[in-house]
Length: 455
Image (cartoon, rainbow, N blue to C red; front, side):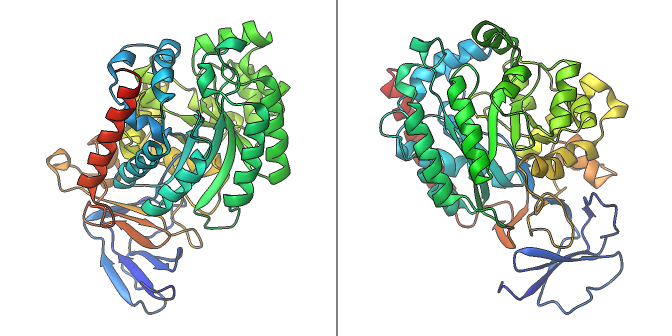
């Protein structure tokens, strides 16, 4: 479709719009933007060159994944890490991950993004913090891999500087010096960060966690992020072990630590954010700190349940993330949205968490977490990122509310996905990807990685 051609996605079975505006007649796409919402029974105001019949589709804004570790797809269901909580799980996997190579990261990134696309995800944030010898240009590798798949990405330049020798958790072979980290962070921002509307690649700075980086690195990262107007990201308050570590190492709880290093502000979003008390939630909300809820990972590692309702009420943007595939073991965002709804109902009650809430967290909420106002909604002027689902499987038979059925009946695969006005998933397939070849390459890389560790 040319940049000027207009495509009418016509008469959808249902459409999820947060504004409540009648868009029963569909939406018109021109270039990379949504240019018109069509009311029920109406025609577009201007002529269209192409029409897509969406009468069998539920149309959502493209789903947005705000926390992932693409490289971890190489260690799914790894025997040495099964049935463990976070700290022992990490200790068992760090030595394996230390053998990561650029080619392994490239194929892991392509596979994770392809899997996400098929689940309706059009934007993904990845937290890559492993830079052992030979992996100094890991983020450059990811930029190239993401361009091949064609999704939007926020690539966070992660880091670890506090190894076992300094009282941290990761092995020394996986940590870098602060100088190396900061020099590379500045280089990557200059090379790749796009702050413009419709950006396909954005950068953020993401020291891994309080138990794997120094206080000086947290402060330096905040200063550099402020200079270049990029966001900050880290894991925080994921487990009680982390809370105990912060008290022992720094003499303060996690939010006090966050404030002490200059991170308590709207430029920051946190992965997990489970173990905050009432006052900490108030402070996070007042500062506008975003939180990514990772339900499957939190259940798999038995970390706890994020207090989404209180965080939102306090003022914190809340989004959804699938987290690394070694703690979730799949990269399926629509499935994650379902789990988010159910686990939050377990905390707040069935009447207090709706399917609309869960879909909002994964679209508009996730966009706010990433600091973006151009994606996450079906509205005029927004980017043309859309996920279209059919309800033609056994699991959906007998449904009466198409939007609710997506989550309640367990949708797991989109039929069509559009990114920036371009179809990236067609008839449930990736037309630009040889899936069999990709899986073979990925599986071979996973075997090589584990074999390097002697597994």
